[in-house]
Structure formats: C-alpha cells, structure tokens
Image 1 (cartoon, rainbow, N blue to C red):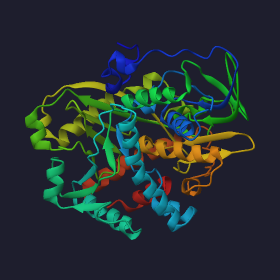
Image 2: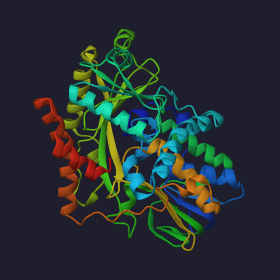
Image 3: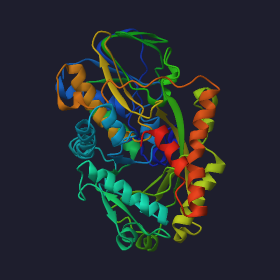
Length: 461
C-alpha cells in the first residue's frame, strides 16, 4: 500500500498498479520550453493540451509532493459545470454574451473530460448522471424556482436546468422532507485520485516529465527556483492553487479554505432502492452551507461540506485535514438526510484546502513578455474548470486567438486578501454566515434577506 493511502477514501481505494511507480525528484538545473509548477489537475491538463498542440515541446512539471496529493486527489468527485462566480458577476465584468459563452463552455467541458477519460483509458469510475439538488423546506423550494428562472433568463432551457416536482425529486434522491428540487445533466461522478494519476500517465506518454518531491521556492520570469537548482523555461505556469502562498512573493493572492469529507462503508441494495441515485447523480440540498455527495462505484456514500475554520496566516497543515467535530456533523447530516443509513460505519474521514480569490473569481492568464502563466482559484469547483483552464492556457501560450481566449475570466486579476488579522476575521465570518442563514430559515420559515444579500455580495452569486 502506498505511504499516502491514508490521505482520503480515494487514495485508500487505489491498487499499487493504479498508484503507478514513484517519480524521481529534480536532480539539478534544467532547461525546458515549459515549466509547470504543480502536478494537480490544472498543471496536468495544461501539459496535456500543450502537447496535443505541439508534441515536440519539452515540458517539466514540478510537484512538491506527489501527483494528486492536493485537492485534485481528495475532492468530492464532481466533474461539474459549476463556476465559483455567478452569471450576473460575469456579465457585469464583461457582457451578457460573455457570461453565456463561459457557462456554455463549462457545459461542454464535462463532455470533454469524459472524452479524454475514454480516449486515454483512465478508469476513474466516470458516471455522467447529472446533479440533483433537493429542496427540503418552502424557502429552499422558492429559491430553487428563482435559480432556474434566473438561468433561463440567460437563454438556458429545461434541457440545461429544470425544476423537479416533489415526486421526481424524491425518485432521484430519496432524502427526507423533499418538496421538489432542480436537475442539470452537466455533471459526472468520478474517483478523483484515479483521474489525477491516470492523467499524469497520459501526460507522460505524450512526452512530459513529472518531478515529484520538488518544492518550488520562487517563480520568476522565465525561471523557477528550487532547492536543487533553477529551471529555465520560455513559459512558466503556476498551477499551485491552495498552496500558492508557499511561493515567495505570492502571499495574500489566494486564501486556502478547508472542506472536509466522510465516507461510509459499502451500503446494501435495500438502502439504494430507498435512496435512489441509480445513475450516480451527484447531490446536495438547497441549504446555504455547501454540502456535496455522491454514490461511489463501490456503493458508498462519499459526503462533504464546508464549515471548517480558516487558519490564521493562511496556514495549511495535515492536522487540519481531519476534525472530529466536523466528522460528527457530517455524519449527523447524512443520517438526517437518509435515516435508512442507520448504524452504517463511517470508514474514512479526510479533507483539504481549496483556493479562493478575494472576489471569488477563478482565472486563467498569460503574459507573453514575462512568460508567466497561471490559473486557479476554483473555490472547490475545479474538477471541470481545470480542464477548461488547461485548454485556455494552451491556446494563450500557443499564441492563437480562439473562443476560449476571449472568455470573461481570461486575465481577470482579483485584489489581494487583507493582511492578518483582518483576513482571519473576515473569512471566518464568511464561513459562519451560511450556517446562521440556514438556522434562520429553519427557525422562521422565511428567507434571511440581509444574510443572503451579504452572501451574494461576498461570493458574486
């Protein structure tokens, strides 16, 4: 068993063959065409599409730990069309057409990931069953109608996003107190660590070299500095996401936000007959606090949520990946959603950090003069978005004007996060706001309007 198999359910359920052989660290100075910092999804997809465009490129990927160590290997396994910023925010920053084009590109991205998974023989338990969100009180049901109406106002149709009545919602997800819900087909359930490791092998087959256990100290125009030597490159891609603050000169650019998960033992056929998810649709409900779940290929529930605190100074530490309090809360939420779960065991508990920009936008950018490129700040919506950013960076670096290079997120730059302790106070207030909003709705049966307005202002939705 690999030494990192206790990182998550996903890492623990890979065989030695699926892990693949260990990769060497960088041995000294190097000259390449493209140096990519980070062997998560962003870095791997960027290398993949660059080499599809030009198989002769010399590409080195530098990874501080191992492929799939960060959020790319530990996430909830939703390859979705979700973006952290809303349509109105995108339209205000660019145009209505630009917002529509970017959202449509995300719809297409889900299918593109599926195409590559099949073409490269990546067994990541791909199941494109869509995404169902159930409304479990009248306020959530009203919000579901408003959300779909808003999407339809941008020209999307019921084929893209639709409201479910109570019967259909319950047939898709047999949770308690279901009054209705929403459904979109643009989401696939995956085994994220298998995707990361399989994509890495596909990139290596195309000619890239991945150096593991090679922390980067500093990124400069046309060079990457490590403890063992400098990598010279025409183009340097920063794909470091939640670990960006570890790079010299990048403090306060992104904030690491923790999200934690649990997984059950494999559940019985009788449980699944009651709960549904026959096509392995990903799921949540209409609460403001972000929760997310999937039925795994081996019939477990993998379920996660936000609510873990932000740590002073944007610290990331393995001790933050698990919290008995959050584990118990997630377990209690699962049992409240699905009483048939009974005494089924929680076999795995894990977590990790995702990255958030100050304005909640993700971005892809490239400056040809300095040779510096970057993408990230997906705020947990990165499984699909990283593929789009990889294709976008490949077009930008290749110097080709394409529909992707004119999307509203290209070149977007958020202001820095506030210094401490303002950052700690602000982010933890933001973490707590959805909880208090949901409590108000449950207690009063009415929307918490000022809290909702504050959430929308903070997150751009």
